[in-house]
Structures are given as C-alpha cells and as structure tokens.
Length: 433
Image (cartoon, rainbow, N blue to C red; front, side, top):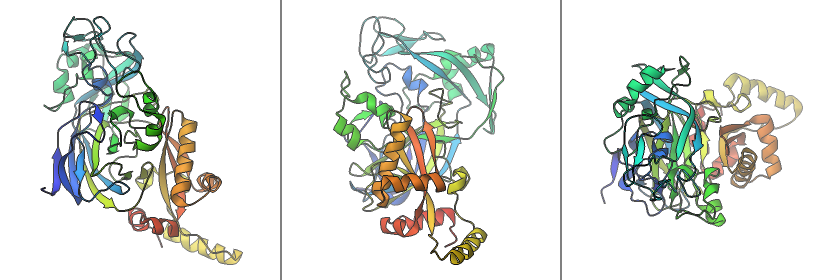
C-alpha cells in the first residue's frame, strides 16, 4: 500500500457512492487532494445512462481513518474552469423515470432503463435513446439561461438566444468538460429566458464529504433528497433506519464551503472516502431555483483525521466573514470590555467559539430540528439550551431548499476541548483567549 502526500483526482463515479464504491489511492493523514470536478445537476440530470443526479469524483481513501472518526477537510482553493454554464427551473418528464427522475431513468417510449443515448442537434429533445431514437431526458428546463464568464472568472453575464445556440453547438468546448466525464453538457439546451443579467463569481463545492455507509445515488446523500429513497420503487431504495443512520450529508449546497472553510465530516466506512463535485460558480442561500451555475472546477483540499470524534453529520467552520453577525468571534478589544462588565456583574465570563452544525431533513423545519438534536448530542446540552444559544449567539441559515440548514452557535471552549476541536476552531478564527 503506497501512501501519498498528494493525490490528483480526475476520475468519476457513474452516480452511485457507498461502501462498495472503489476508492482511489491512499492519502496520508494531513495530505492534499486536487480535484478536477465535473458539473453537477443539469448535465447528469439530462444524461439517461447516469444513475445519480450528479457525477462526483471517485472517493479517496484516507490513511488511519476508521469508522467512528472524523476527517477535517480544509478547503484551500476552488477555481472555475468552465467558460460558460446553463441552469434553470426544472420540470419532470412523465414516463421517463420510475419513481425518481434523478435516479431511475428510463426511455419513455421503449422503457429501456438507464438507456444509452446519442445527441442530435441542440435543444430540449437533443438527448435521444440509442435503442429507439425517442427523446430520453427525464427533465425539461422550463425557465433557464446561459451564462458566460469573463476570462478572469470574476463575473458572469447571461446571453441572448443567438449566442446561446452558438454555444450549444460547441457545448463541450465551452463547458471544458474533462475527458473522463460521461455527462451531456447542459449547454446543448441553448436556454436564454434571462438576457443581460450579471452576477459575481463566488465559487464553492456543492458536494464535499465522505462516503455514506449504504450505496446510494450521489445527489441523494443528504436528508432532503435522501428521504426520496425510503422504500422507493427502484434498486437504490433504502430503509428508514439506513436513512437515519448511514448518510453523511456530503451533498450540502452550502455556499460557505469555499476557500477558507473547514468541513469536519463523519467517517462511516473504513478509509472515509473523501469526494467532491457539484461546484457552483455562484449561489444565494437556499438555491431556490433548485439548481444553479454548475461548472468544471479545480479544487484543492487538505485532509486530516480526527480520531474518536463520532459525528452524525458534518460540522462547518466557514470563513469568518460568512458567519452570522451574532456568531462572529470576539475581537480582543471586545473581550477586554466584556471581562470588565462581567466582573462588575459578579459572573464568570464564558469563553466560546462559533461552530456550524449541519442539519438535514425532508423540509427546512425538519432539517432545523435535526440540527438542534445533533448539536445537543455532540455538545452535551439539552435541545432547549441549544435553541437558546442559537437564538442569542448564532442563527439558522438555509443552505438548500427543501432541507439543508446551518445551525450556528457559540460553543463553550471547555466543551470543544473535550471533543478535540478547540485548537482547530481557535486557530481558524484567531480567538483572543
């Protein structure tokens, strides 16, 4: 077994991840992974032969990562490679799937499951079943756009139908799809319902985490989409027990999983299986259109093993500027003032630090309750105490509709010390104590 300090990863799954997924390499504890990611969402969604809603990187085995540990994933860089992207609001095509259009795709005419395909021209019906020739995509984009990025990848601007059609004819070139990617580039749809809309490029990884303990579609490794798999009418159905126990919430779509962030993910299979994908050029909280500007990206992460920290779902330490106002770490001058106030009041001031607990569930309310319970269990608090701390020292933010949230609270330093997290948090936020 060769242990490597750096692994370059430009290989991808067919849409399924889990304990039976082949891992590549063995990364040294403290080593780096350089991912070349493919677009998530729309490209894989319109590709009938892919068995998940995304096309993520093949997981990487991490040295000394055992079930019941955690891995600390430090996001060092995310750089947009694609020259253009396309996205929009979707509609399912009846008859082109069995139970779940992201997972159980089939030709609506000949009923071939996960059919091989060919691409003919551009537009909504360009992806066709290789067996019978019928349009085979299980999705339509009912309102969408094509966005072009400037050379420095600072801005994106949506373009006219004429230019969108020109880009569609050279879709793979504009998308910069890696050679090993098997998806159809969504740019072939040539959508142009928004023209002249500008946005800032602020890239992040929509997928980052560890392999779940059950084989599932990559896009469903989270509590919202994962709920669709419970007793589903296709081969990737899971039980409610597996849903509650085995997922790792790697499909976050939290826009703070960007350079400068630290994601702490549970290890639920031997070797952890760190993977990435679904990079977005930009996204507001909630990803309310259901999808956003998926791009090819180069991403670099550093991975360290944290022994014995058993997590039900991820923790996130976002860049300080992304923290809610009440959760921001105390500055040294503020802390000096607070100590003086505490002495006058006759109380001992609690040293604390911000931590985000990811909650997930079928709805936003479900996700928030899961986040409260995860925080209570991890930090040794009652749910009521967690809710009070979140209310006055943090916030609940929407990562993705319908059911990913960031539950932020200031956690006592002595609690973080018991968990082995205090040094990580203190260094990340340059705490004054």
